[in-house]
Image (tube, rainbow, N blue to C red; front, side, top):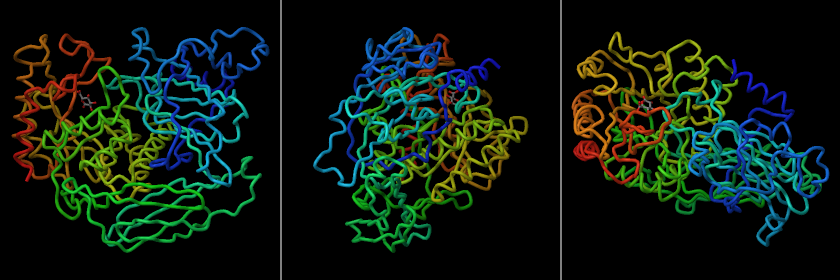
Length: 607
Ligand code: GCB
């Protein structure tokens, strides 16, 4: 009740025209490969536990005319403390470690940022702000005007600044709120840390008046052609548009030089679609072949590096380029001992290098969309990916706003990464109770995934009926791949049960063990044997491998997890604020015994 009251306070009492998910997937812009101006770096910052800023309208306070103040504000967004962006505030100061609430970010945008450059389009400019990720609700204000808000902590969002830019200095403000509420996705209870803040890059894009908003390119289902969908956006109702009365775009041109493709695509009412006969070399983990793709439309031009491959489910098999594949995987969180959820190419490359050392061809990026560089680097280095949205445990399946939020996060993830050959699975949930409302909620998500991307497999971490000792979940009928999280040897001690489940279940589609594992504290404080010891953990891995490899319908596994990761809820003497199921400690270098157990299994089945 208290939580709901707080939500409605946000909407009504603060008098901000809050438009839930105003900045949703429909505002997305294709930005990969484009040049941008970075707005990373220092931003003025202030935590605001009581949401005073929304009540006092700090965003309306302009530095140019401070005399307009009717009363003193309790904070001055143009002075005071600053923090780096991207960052998570929990990692910056001890007093912010557990802070949950709103925080204000203010950045001065100098006129040079908007000066016309030689390379710029002739027809005018549109300025698009891209925020890589902000946990969880982000309200965007420019020069005191509310431009929209975004829900969802791990997907990028875009806001057009063009019409609201001042001639001289502009002030950009963000109000980011990471409060966990029952209606959010995820809700309150998660097994990872609630890192608040703007923790991925902030960029400004200068685009021509008509620009390419989206491109979806893939191998056709029959494998004989390349298919592409294009969306071109035209400035509507903007000052730029009324000033320049140019024609709208009727054609786009696709080039894939290495395949000799140069194709004209008709655009009608901003949309075009095309099938081009082609025989590209297939992308696979062994041969991660990427082709440069160039799309031009009017004065706009985008490029991408794309791999072409097929992925289908046939009976209990997963076929990559027509061949059955076994997924030698590992689960990973986006978590760093000192940086929180801030990630970098170096961090992702280290993760993939460790996965390679394990003998993996597959990673489960749990439990929310990771940085887009993860899929780009997996494309380059040859890994298959399971990507997911945080429909985690018991979220509010009866709430239509929760569904709206989950669907939006799913579409934003799919639209961001659907040109990545590495991504083979969209996962729509993790260990959710089998209720009627959950079934209809998740059926809707499965349909949404297929509608936005008919070329990949849909999965979820499903349920085991522990009384009947078999896989049993009504959601299974709506999936291509059944994920199973099981912790025999850890939460469930009796290993014979795992064997019984294996025998009692007769799934008609592939099963991937999306999680299994055990905690192992390998520090000097860790026990030498029994629960929480490295030795016990390694034993669990041995027994798991021994049991699972006998089940023919299991087509892969992604044990939990590559690195120890931070979480508020685990505070026993061996955990000390971390989930210690990592094969490698939180320092991302000290390997535990179980690492070598899994590596020797994966290397033994590799060929
Ligand atoms: C699970 C969850 C995962 C937890 C893990 C654990 O089943 O999906 O988020 O971290 O178990 O360690 O308990």
